[in-house]
Every structure is written in C-alpha cells, then in structure tokens.
Amino acid sequence: ERTGRACTGGTGQLEHRGQPDPRLQLESRERRRSHLRPANRHQPVLWQQHPGGGWARPIKIEDHNLKAVGAGTTGLTAYSKNRDTDWIYQGTIEVVVCPSGGGGGGAAPSPGVGSVGPKGGKVTGAAGKACVEIPAGVLDKEVVITIKQVVLTEVTAPPATLKLASDIYEFGPAGTKFAKPVTITLQYDPAKLAGAKEEMLAVYYLDETTKTWVSLGGTVDKTKHTVTVEVDHFSKYAVMVETVVKPPACVFSDLTKEHWAYECIITLCAKGIVAGYPDQTFRPGRNVTRAEFTKLLTGALGLAKETPEVLTFKDVKPVNWHYEWVEAAAKAGLIKGYKGEFRPNDQITRQEMVAIMIRAAGKESEALAKAQEKIDLADEAQISSWARGYVALAVESGLIEGYPDKTFGPMKNTTRAEAAVIICRFKKY
Image 1: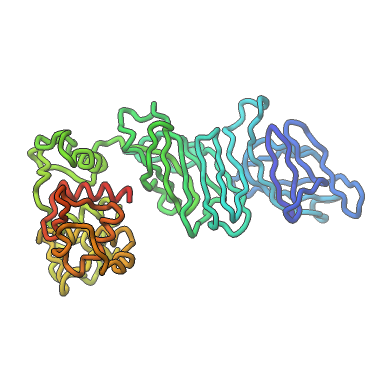
Image 2 (image 1 turned 180 degrees about the vertical axis):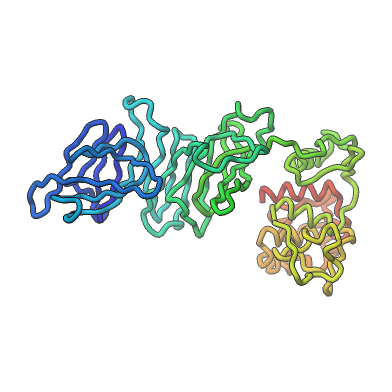
C-alpha cells in the first residue's frame, strides 16, 4: 500500500510507510517514465487509474508515463506485465494544485496543504483567504490538512435569501470531527455585500445530509475583512449575508443614539433577536416577562424549538405563544420553574435573569461554589440565598454591572434595555 502527493507545477513522490520512496515518483509539466524496482532491478510498469464513480482523473497516463494534471484523489495500480493477471502495487495518490511560483498560469486556485500533529498548528490556503488553527492536544497524530476552493456549480447553492460574500472552501480530510473546537477564518469581499452591513456577515457550512447551509455566526474583523468562527468538524464553509432585511426596521421613535443601551439594541435588532412594536417604538424601560426573556435568549443562542409529548411545566401549553421557546430552554437546562410551574407571565427579576445567563454559559457548578463568597455590592444582603453564587460569578466576570450607587437591585424587574445589554455581553462572554 503506497500513498503520496504530487503537484501540478512542481514535483512530488510517493511514500512508503510514511517515508519518501525515491523509487516511484510523479513529476508534472514533464512526462516521466516511472519505474519500480522489485527484486532490486529496474522494471518498467504499466499504470491503471481507477478514481471511482464520477471522480476527476487528476493524473494523465500515457503508456508508462504519469503526469499530474489537476487536483483530486485517485487510485493507481502498477502492473509489471499484463494488467489482467499480474499486479505489483496498488494504492492511492492525492494530487493537489500547488503554487506555480511564476509558472503554470491558468491553473485552479491553489489549495492549502499542511501537516498538523498533537502540538497543533495553522494551515492557510487560497492565497491567505482561508485558514484553520488547530490547538495543541486536539489531534493525537499527524494529519494532512487541506483547504481548497470549491466551484459553486459543484455544491448545493445557497437560497435566494443568502448572498455569498466569499468563495466556498472545503476543509479536509472531509468529515473530520474534533473533540475540541478548532478556529476557521475566512476572508470576504466587501464589494459583494450589496449594501448589507458587515456586522451581519456570518460563516455558513453545508450540511451534507439536509443539503442546506447552516449559520455558525462568527466574529467580523472589518479591518482585515475576515470572519472567524469555532467549529467542531470539517465541511464546506463560506461567508454569507442575508439579503432580506427582517422587519420591522431597526429605527425606533423612543430610542436615540444617546441611550445607554442603544448600540446593543440596534445590533440585536439587526440580527433579528429583538424587535420593536407596530407603532415604531422599542419601549426600553418596559419590564420583561419570564416568557419574553426566555424567547429572547433562546433566539440569541439559536436553540431549536421543542414540542415534547410530555409537558415540562403545567402552566405552559401548546396553545401558548411561548410554548416552543420555553420547552427549548427547559431542554437545554436554562430554566427550572417552581413546583412544576414556570409562571411565564411573571416579570423576571434581575437575579433570575442572571441565573439563567450563567446556566447558558455552562458555569452553573462554578456559580454554586461561590454561594458563600462576599459580593462587592451595596445591597448584597438583598440577594436571595439561592441566587448568591450566580450573582457573585456574574459580577466577578463582568457579565453584569451594578448601578452607579453600587447596588444591583436583585429583586427589581428586568427592563427590555437591560435584557438587550446582558445578551450583548453574553455574546462576548
């Protein structure tokens, strides 16, 4: 079994058990007569390529000569006499298009290829437009990582509501899954935004099972024109932006740029997480109910709606508008209720809001361990015993800030503006 790599515009050779084997080489742009040396003697061989159903043929075979002509993966069998009866070696060769260094113009975009092992590393492709960073400890052996540009006609096209802001890149080995997140960064073209705001950009991946493009969000760098996101598997990725503006428009008659929560409210509105009222108001000082805050958070987290056969709370039923959102939050362990009830129409207190946010961050056990710690708040004594750990951790980590008089107001009701701000901070938490 022999595997190896060859480059158009360069040279490559096969490997035997992970070591270069000079006996069997491929060279592009020039035809090369390939030999094997069984029994320590030169012997010309006859090659047969068998790429499989519909695969490209990256190697051109002419009699005894091999020539790398494109990118792809193919199987090869080497014969010494008669291809029907007498085979010598059989294996797989991966042919990649390498940078030409000034020659071989007109080739397909150059994919990135790099070997990453247990110590981690970074692989960049497409002239720096796509890269992946793998932390130490993610891989347990050396893996050849590839990044190649994919032609749109070869994949499922995005829906009309999504516009590509970058090329599509396939990261390989295809289907690789990681126990810990790895970081992908893609460069986008500002000219392709079609008037959309850069903060609306997101990285999408192609779900090969459902044949749909799924948003992963991401962090936009407007200076470098990149979007960075953590992923747990390799797939096809691209930067896209929604072309349909979600109503209502993010202009509110009662919200000016001077409002302390303005930036957060507008950002969340642009992403469809919060919305105003039909009269074009946002009402930032209006109190939020437990059901309303739950819907807000599940939307921000991208949780799928849930409709279980057995109800989680006896006062939340399928006829209620908030039913699917509450069930989604309950399944995710974000809410717990009171004696079988959720009390969806009660206004949510600030300490209740904080507890839900800490659970959403996956830090509930850390919070519970801080239940006896002193909290640097003037109204510390007013915090319920069950909520002390959540508030302590939220204050310590900067998720929440007290009022100017150093109070927290644990029993105060949460306003729409406060809910929007804590969601914004959570997205950066």
